[in-house]
Image (cartoon, rainbow, N blue to C red; front, side, top):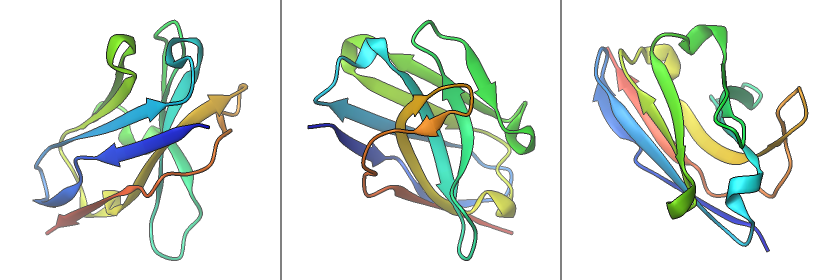
Length: 119
């Protein structure tokens, strides 16, 4: 059974940085593309960044140049480095296995980690 545990969120001022981590278990982690998604209050959950098994990356336009996704297959962990944070980045952040060109989330969601960016 796949388990995804996100951590690293918190409260930060605009312009600050955070690094999120997602530890995965129950899968052959290195074989899967992974994605970070976020959901703000009243909005749908959207892809923020994705990384393929081979390390190719994809970003939402709103975070390009500010966020960096990476993975450590030895630790079964995917990371999201978030710099130059903006209040609009406030959301609950989730990771998931990502399938296909649409980066469709393929597993049950974890609890997520809250990111709050203050002005």
